[in-house]
Amino acid sequence: MDRIVINGQKRLSGAIHINGAKNAAVAIIPAAIAAEGVCVIENLPRIEDVAILANALQSLGMDCKFLDPHTLQIDASSIKERKMTYDLARNMRASYYLLGAMLGRFKEAEVPLPGGCNFGARPIDLHIKGFEAMGAKITQEHGMLYAKADRLAGANIYLDMASVGATINIMIAAVNAEGVTTIDNAAKEPHVVDTANFLNMLGANIKGAGTDMIRITGCQRMHGGEYQIIPDQIEAGTYMIASAITGGDVVVENIIPKHMDSLSAKLSEMNCKLEEGGDYIRVMAPEPLHGVNIKTMVYPGFPTDLQPQMTALLSTAKGTSVITETVFDNRYQYMTELKRLGCEVTVEGRVAVIEGGSTLTGAEVRATDLRAGAALIIAGLAAEGRTVISNVKYIDRGYEGVETKLGALGADIRRETR
Image 1 (cartoon, one colour):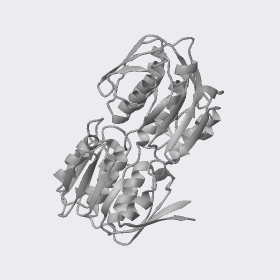
Image 2 (tube, helix red, strand yellow):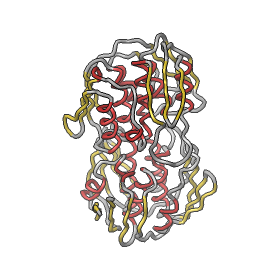
Image 3 (cartoon, one colour):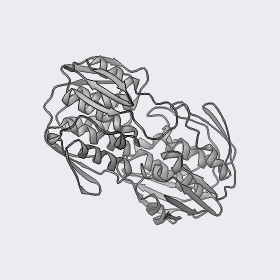
Image 4 (tube, helix red, strand yellow):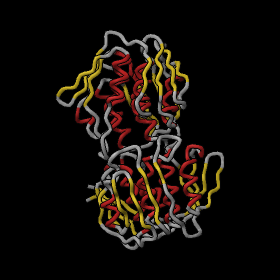
């Protein structure tokens, strides 16, 4: 029953360190099942999704333990089960990566249908299509997915859309398939590349990650190793936007600036001042900001996971802005909560029209999903008076110590337990 309380209109300044990428972590942890040796994964974010996955691996009989809050050691040689329980999977989307990992190594798996944030249809039919092309039989019964194969063989797989989840899941399974698997129209996101790099470190043979064609030569002997995951692109973007909405001056450190190009371009267009270094971006907003139009797209386009945060920012900028959401069909559920803070937004289908220049005022609001919760925090930082955000379990799924990090930058923010 935690909640986050913000007394707004405090200018942010200082430096903030970005943790490892959530979306890479939740793929790489299951991918460690492919290894016959011990894997040590470093730079993990200390978030709920990582804890859930670690518990899931332990429930399967693996020796899985944290060496420190950001380092996880996994030894899959002791795995006993091929089934993941519903209770562990129901709160996170990325549980489906266990299906590909166990199917690849053991040729059988049983995983509940994935949970996680609810903002529209996110079917896993492309995952199933890929597994079936490699020779697996997939059935669904009582909310469970069953996968079994006498053998997995390489296949040519075309994805009808560039799905990040399907690309990664097929790639994880294919490293243990016989022969060559190609994924055409593959997703290019940084965490796809990071997962491929991790698997290659274990001994896999994956080429083309980061392009629209990935080629996996399977049946390589997979050993253990140490790997450090990439910084979190979305966490970095969230704090860049937080600096902008408060007229702040914040250095966002430990990032890969290239991953932030689409956001940096929009912030510059809005009249923010940006300075970029080898592993940081400084975001300054000394002058009034004005609206821009945004269309979410797959990488390297503008990420859908930064769309809610940008909506909060655009509601305070001068002029009218238009956001077109092309990735998910119902990601505007959070708009009702933003309107409670004073945002003027009209939604029609996938298009949101934002009348900027609003003076936001504090209110009691509720996070409806992970990034919606981040948007409410950003709006609360700019609002007059007191904002209380409940349902922060969603925020904890993707942000480590958000109140501590923002407090160090000068925000008046605290967590309360009721």
